[in-house]
Image 1: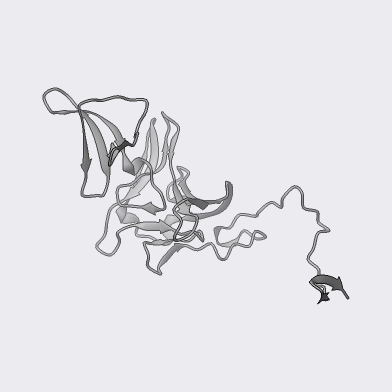
Image 2 (image 1 turned 135 degrees about the vertical axis):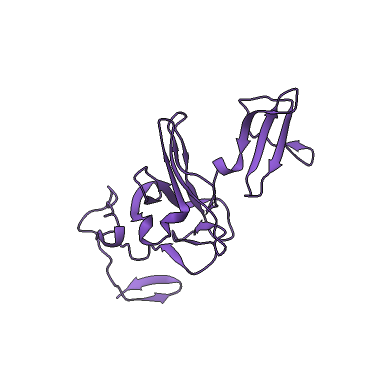
Length: 205
């Protein structure tokens, strides 16, 4: 693909001179290789294979067992910076169980059936793939993982998974007990001190 005059490689491992890009009604951008008669020969690339912070209807959440590729939702760094943030959302293959990670560590698990209409969710589990997706309802366009780790209906205030209850010391509400850094000692603590400043040099009292 080209952005102005500069090419953007979508898949450097495959070449297909006779190809076409189609934006589907679902929002999925699909690049296909065509045969000489115009029929679709194969799918080269599709944007739904690379979710960012939004899980859209028909977008997969799970894993391709043949290629080991994972379909994972990743939060932005901030609301204004689209770089990968601290939180990820995964489906581990257990029916309805979502997993939120924080900086690579398991942070929280949640049964999707607790908060969502299961009739609109589809599960696929076979020798090549394990994933879930959902169909669109009139009031839902997309599910978003925020930079704070909250999984909710787009920009609405209705939350599917809330992480603010996780403090790292208990396992209620699906929270996972957090491990302390290896460099931290059990004797480490914060201590309140008072001081004064004289000529920009602090002196403890």
